[in-house]
Length: 161
Image (cartoon, rainbow, N blue to C red):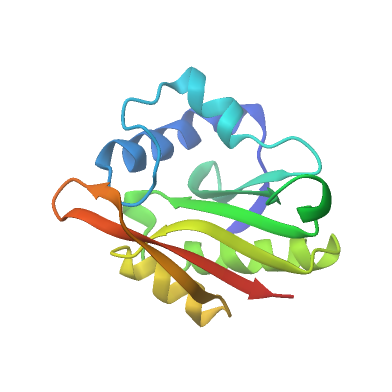
């Protein structure tokens, strides 16, 4: 597996991952009815942001987008989002993408990385982020409508660089 910048030929596979994750409605605060036309400009970052794919040959296993969390005086803090294909989960793809984001943010001079809305019931992601140095700063209770669990919290997580 290798991680590289996204290119236009990757988009159909990236869209399939995004579509499946968003429609499941369990881990991302995106509209489950999101269309491909809405997803592409939201996911494919422009500089100073960056979008990458984790690939095995021609197969896209996962994707991440990253960039400044806020403009202007907040632009020294990065943010990122990750999605992994269902058949590639628990194989190290998320870990590799996390490490790539940390390396990129450090090299780009960011002071830290903030995640604004990590679904508290997404135990795999929360554990992965904590293992790589993020801490939960707080949780907004009942702020995410989970399709099976009802209203659950969203964590604000931060990692100093």
